[in-house]
Length: 366
Image (cartoon, rainbow, N blue to C red):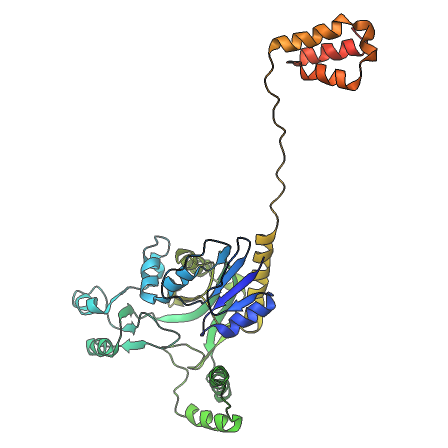
């Protein structure tokens, strides 16, 4: 049995770390020769077409990940769920947006997005129809109603349960912004085998920070003056947790980081799901713990089923009478019956009454 972790170029840092912690085989390609007893964990694996995986246990099937990567399609799937429809903000394709606005079926302000996006990329805040038209010209593929967010969260869901939760809080300090940007640059440099002078990088980032207007009230990302702060699970509103777990289920995923929020009326909304989030610290430990428990569950041998002996073939009543007759015919010799003879007589009986009679005769109680 082998544990495989299949990740993408965008998720390989956490993917490799998980492979090491789980003693698994990390790969950026589809695992070959996946055996029946193997376990495949797809950590944000990217595929361009459906993947056939007939063997092994799959956690986050690559086909489900591919469907979720198209954020518009993911919204359609979630909106189609009766249990989740009220937690998805109204949206429509770009080619329908102007007609929707004219019919008052959707209203300004809107957020324009591309079908495939990550973080704050591919996003337009539209405060007027002119903004909408400009966003379409620049590549927006769908639009969604702007949410008046009070609190934004990321809930980490694993097999139907929230295992960890964080809330986005302001982090508009220069040190925090520079540290986050520096980490990103170092990741890029490492992947491309480049050396970056630390002093130069810190100096340039310090200058760039002065040009920022942080925190960004529209895109609450860690590069725009926000950070994640741990939240006790019992402090989360039940409707928010329910919406997050349902969203993962509806998209056919086993686990995922659900970006969600509460509006000013405390109504829960699901924004999107990340199937391969970058993990550090406690969040990473929670996933490792969850994966280890799941792997142990999969590997645990099935409980030995109680073996029920086959019922003896039905015997004719005559056989039982013959057994009784045989014992009655030689009562004097009954005490000399050996175990095999007694067993054969008992096998021939057809009722408790006949069995008792044979035993009585064999034991001299006849």
